[in-house]
Image (cartoon, rainbow, N blue to C red; front, side, top):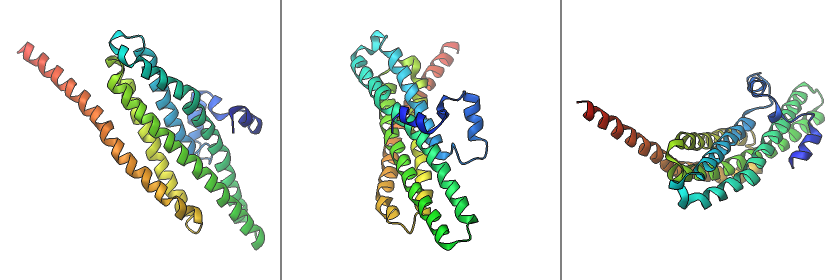
Length: 237
């Protein structure tokens, strides 16, 4: 579903709201926007930070060897990754709200057939919402890869931005893992849970592996900082 189609089912896209209102919406104690949308939002932030590093680094002569890579990364994010994350944000907010509505109707119903229908429909929609979260995780892995690349080859003065991009994408993945685990627990009696368990385990293993590379970035800049401070102390001694 594209952004223009989403606008047809909501009076206003949630991401179009002012930042303060959006944050208040997350803290309002309602189903929507919820954790799935929050995971997507973390990765959207990562995407924006990577674009910033690419834009700045392509103006720096010292990064000339990587200018082509920065251009490729920027295009991939602007044309594919960020637009899809925005769609997933809105879709999760819309569909999970319906899941909660169906659960409320199920709990209030006194008719066994109607109660079963509401339950079935809510679980069907929960599967759909879980698919969104799997996709958020997949896109976030791409962003982590890009974040590490721009950290290693981008302009040295904006590695704080690169670090935020890595951290935000990692948070998007970890958040997705939490959400998917919880959803699969709810879907235990369905084939969907067993069919997707290995996919979830694969994501967890992949995260463990890429975290090592992410932490190596932290170690590298920490070492530089320590060396710089020690050098200054030696000068003052």
